[in-house]
Image (tube, rainbow, N blue to C red; front, side):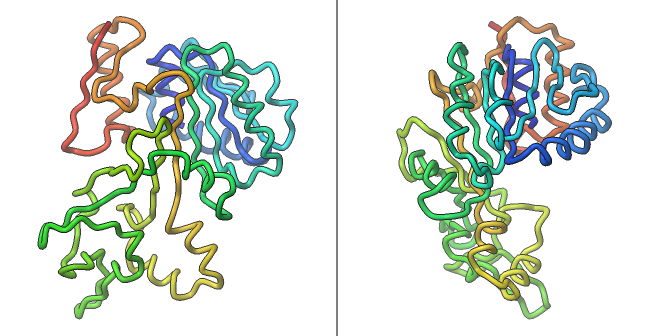
Length: 286
């Protein structure tokens, strides 16, 4: 959602089509998440995201954010878009709606697609799409033995219970605790024209390793555990050209004043779009 709002405000996008499996998810998301974004960030997002009574339509600066369900293809017609976001793609009953949604970008100069679902079945939905990407995995460098670790690949061995009763994320080589922020994205298929990321709760600072281990040991089916807790995919596809989000420098569609640049930096800091404390954002006016 933050990427959608950012693109409408600063990249010159006129329309973003954000898709959910059904209209029920649209209503819940609009009433809860969008209102919270406005209320919690009044000096940044709240300045240019209009909270309207229309559940499926929000005005963001000079563009529009369309929230739609994928059950009916009628809601996808006559919606111009520069970016299409699929939330929980595998849950949609009508997978043919994917092609129709992408067709909404026929007249766009940007043509960007973002998929953000949990996997369900092999070679279906997001799993099939991920196989067509460069397949980026988060590899963490152990500060003890200097080995690069893929925690998902070595789960559950990567979770170690200490004598003191703690559960830590550990290097499978030297068994020392690893820092989840000391890593980098590494592509298995570098050079592919589609970018895909494998995310996991193993990499989240908000999920305790002990909780993950407990869920694993008490799961009724391991398939559901792996799909809902361990592996999450996100895919970024630019149909026409490279996305500005894949560059170290972000080019603005127009020249920004010093006040607008400050507002942009503050918005990115508050909402967490600056990835880590080690990274800096370079904003370059055209």
